[in-house]
Length: 394
Ligand SMILES: Cc1ncc(COP(=O)(O)O)c(C=O)c1O
Image (cartoon, helix red, strand yellow):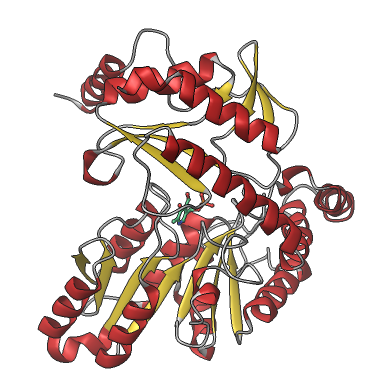
């Protein structure tokens, strides 16, 4: 089979999973009206499948900052941070992130994906060890591959398994980076952080926490699971993204270790790519201010989360272990997931369909992402529609 034939075979397999003409993946969104409403085809839909947790994509402060930045700085930097794209805005955002996390150092990357690639491949290399949760995001896996270090997976959220594997490493535990996520994107469950911190301290390893889904959501000031569990001074590196609670695009790594700065000279995903546009940087800075002062946004988000989680639970849907901004209904088969997803879309509700092998343990999921911008009426409409469709998964 030649290369093109291989791609054709893959396409045929994918098409066989879905009824003819149905775009379940990469669905085209024609117009966006607000953080919670858009048009797909000819239909106005309620967005419940985007990670706009604080609903900031249309915040006037962010729009205004982005407009001003385009006028003053142009549409793009056309260069990398290392060469010719290191603007004052990038440095200001790094200072603000470091201040927010009360850390010595912060590095901004062009995407959240690159933040993990850049941090991981810059921190560890050949001969070192990466000990990662088996349900880690693809960007963590790809960063691990890029690093050239030995990769060991421990069972998802299983601190005892992590400890066992570290013990087996002996002296090498000291050149090991452990990686967990604050909040896992498939089922919305959280890492057992206090236990993980205790283990990494016992073995002298370093710990990186990816807070992509927990920034702005967990912790009194929105600093994620690390803040919520009182571990701010125990975690070595935090990575995250601007593409969820901050409503833009980009990523970061923060640390109290001054050595983080060295990554700027060794991290290929930092060095060999163009830096974020001025508009992206300025809207992110404005969003970070709103997130920092966002107690009311977080209160509204959590009111919506609690309402949807408890309604779906009452209806008998099988959900992740705890409420969070990601609420996934686990159904018996890909066919049921597809029918539920399609039923919701026919009722004007857009959620995410996740089919094997994308979800943990080959599960089939219909995943909702809740936003502070949803009204209680919208949340009730979603729950009522799930109720109406519950026969689909019976
Ligand atoms: C846990 C995790 N880390 C990193 C990323 C990458 O972030 P971005 O999409 O902003 O590049 C994602 C994206 O979904 C994620 O879920």
